[in-house]
Amino acid sequence: MHEISFVLVTAGSEEEAAKIGRTLVEEKLAACASMVPRIRSIYRWKGDIHDEQETLLLIKTRTSLFPALRNRICELHSYEVPEIVALPISQGLQEYLDWVVDETEER
Image (cartoon, rainbow, N blue to C red; front, top):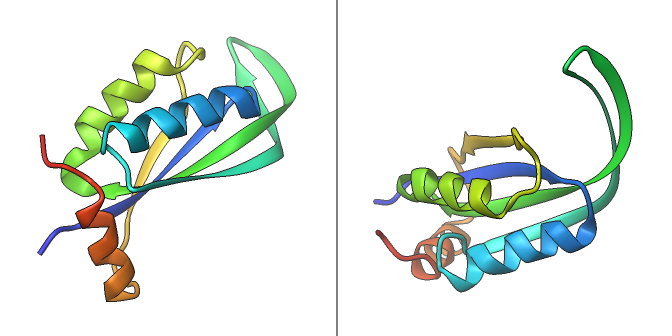
C-alpha cells in the first residue's frame, strides 16, 4: 500500500504556481496540483515584516516521491527559501488515493 501526502507550497504569482504545478504533474511527481489564488501572507523575512499576495499550491503525491518533488520545486521556484510542507493523508476515498498512485511514478 502506498502512502499519500498533501504538499503545501506558496508562490509569488499565479503564473509561477501554474508553472510549478504543471511541471510536477507532467513529470509524474504529482497527480494533481490545485491552485488557490490571492491568499494573503504576513511573515517575517530577514528581519522585516512582509504582507503580500501569494498563490497556494495544494499538491497530491506519493509520500515516497517527496524528496524528488521537493528538489524539483526548489529548482523551479523563485523564492530563496520556498514554503514546502508535506502532510500525510491518513484517510481518504480509496478510489481517489488509488488514482494518486496511478498518476505518479516511482523514481
